Image (spheres, rainbow, N blue to C red):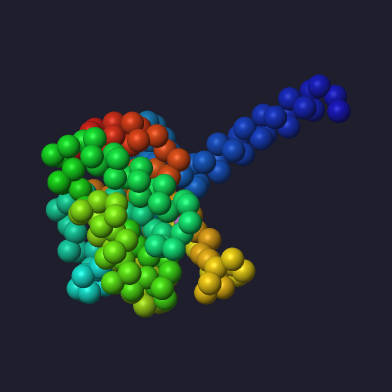
Length: 204
Ligand code: NI
């Protein structure tokens, strides 16, 4: 291939990548729009929304019960072998590092495997991570609605190694929501704890 073509293709790749980032990553979009001096509300990410679920104590809760507090929301499931535990450990480590300010944040695990994650199962699991971590589960429809609101992809897939024959593929994203329930930022299980801590300290 001629050098000029390689350069054109590279430039197109970068532009396309940038466009995808703007379309896909809500906080990039938010930053760009604010940077361009646009109306801030235009850049508001459409992530998050209403949910009605059951917590790990068996109590029915909705998103409105968490208003007035920041939320760190992670979607996963208790039988997840690696990614979820890592995500929850990162979240817990960040909360521990910000000390007393962490009391303004409710950390939440929403199960993507409601068939196995009963409130009792969640109760056992969440206490292994953080004393204030809230586990939420619900019917298949309720979980699907919550996942849709947060743009979370998940899919039950066959797994011969599992005793129940399946596992759940899912996106691993940690959402920071403000006290009005609006999206602030997102992280993944691979985000450095320090990066999460500095982001939290900027908003708290
Ligand atoms: Ni997982």
